[in-house]
Length: 133
Image (cartoon, rainbow, N blue to C red):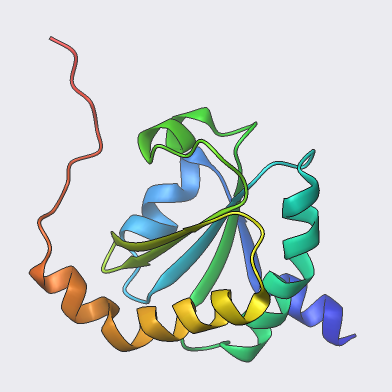
């Protein structure tokens, strides 16, 4: 039952829901970019779900399949999976790539919660939309 509850706390998003659920989110968001064929992603999934349970109500957890969502994947320069990107006020503030010890991911989530808002305020907004002339 606990595994099901934690799994529901990780929101599956796609290119069409990205802007409303990540970029316009008032809460911090951690996104796992994954591929269903990636063994490292499968190894990290249970830890990601567990952390979603631990940090419920403090930070939103989401995941996006890189194979089905090329626009967002390319827009953020994702070249390896799993990639964990941390967003505060819709801005990327931190990134972690690869299969890592769960304690490292947990520490980065805590750091994003502690320092993400001030980091987002001091950072320059990057327009990820490409205009072709």
